[in-house]
Length: 427
Image (cartoon, rainbow, N blue to C red; front, side, top):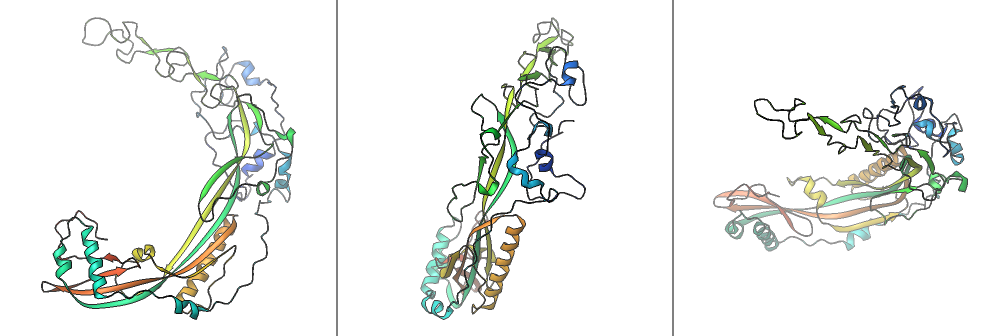
């Protein structure tokens, strides 16, 4: 069986193979050939001839210069089946690892929105506050003059209260993959020590809620020691630069022993026409990059756990010309907060577009977690009030506008009248 030609991308166990195609994990786990730690002869290596993509010289040093340095997984014939994953073969090899069943959802409670709205009050932006906000903004810009902000005449202010809905879904997904590392003669936690647990049976410490993280763990009792598949247990292979000769043609004189149009012998090779190989430093072989010269590899199943925080955001419609991306990041006044294992759409919220946004966000997150075979650990939905004020002003015979948004009175101005250069960002 030939070697894999390149890196194999780790596949999620839930991935569905194409019609007529054997899944990668099935190839890995159903190998019946038993290769123990004892050295077993390989016919092509004994004969000292090239067979397939492997070549071996009579001196016992493999010439692997034409192969990839370090494939992600060894050839599938080196892998053994672990009894704890027999469930993969039930149902024609199509069984998928799903997260464990979750507890029944809590009943949805009615929310009295009138009490929320009554106790949530955002201070009104006065003319004095609007001018101070603009002066503070101008002071942060090196090329904006303060006289315009100080002397402009505020003519009209239009205020609007926006609602921002946010939904966060903190989920956990698990995949497994074969990996390996050089074997340094330490204790091997193999199948003889016990049965490997299933993916979702492995207990791990969950990070703080809504903080993304990725961790990798070695699955207990899944380790196997094998001869290195790159160097075939030699710890080194023939250098690809000099093909084991330790010397290469002199790069200065190209082997002519003297340089063209120059008297005397070549200074680099001292007239020999040969130079020490820089690839292997004249050794003729290279230490195997896969096993680091240890000759054996420790193969094991690696559990990869990804904690992901998915975010859905929606800001209610407004008729002003303030960019929406600013309002999405604006500081707001908290109106409502609901955090639990499962949250429900806000069907009775007074603003209809917020109710529809909550339904849409929860549906999207539910579909995404189901598609990725993830388990939802916690959900959080919030509603914030974001004040937005459009300020119309007059300065030196011209009228213009600027905007004040958020409870911290951030300013957006598209065309400030006293600007000296173009090196500053407007927003």
